[in-house]
Image 1 (cartoon, rainbow, N blue to C red):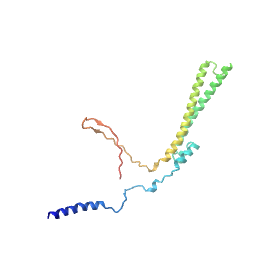
Image 2: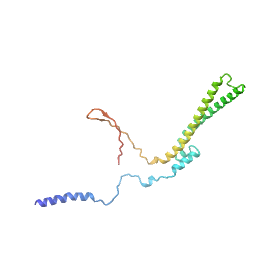
Image 3: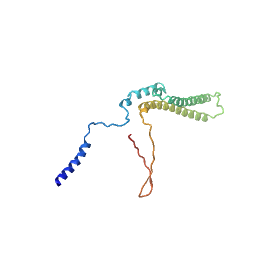
Image 4: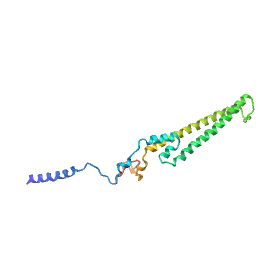
Length: 187
């Protein structure tokens, strides 16, 4: 009798394991999962966008369909080019006045000392060069932004993202601990 009870217990124990161990399919099915066709990526799109932005600033953003970035790019580059031209004109005015001062001829800055004119030339040259470097920086940033934006699949990102801060109290010190965790919920 004891042996029959042990045998029946073992059969019931292993019957549950056999049922859970067997599986007809080797696929994991997820509800509302996006299809593979939704994630087709053009590997040449970033290179095209960068090339288009290099040829004509803002053209890469138009290729990426980010039309709102075009006025931002032209505004940034136009402003820095405006200040380049303004500082270059002032530099040339002070430089010509300096040359006329050395030649002993009258110029528009007759009431300035020659050291003040030299200082103004130096200052305007620094400002002009800085404006040029800022313009070049915006041009490069335009190319990089088009390239990076083409890499990112904006229409495939889940916008249902939330932030829920939690504060934990340490039971030993009775102090509040701060931390951060990233969680993802599968539907």
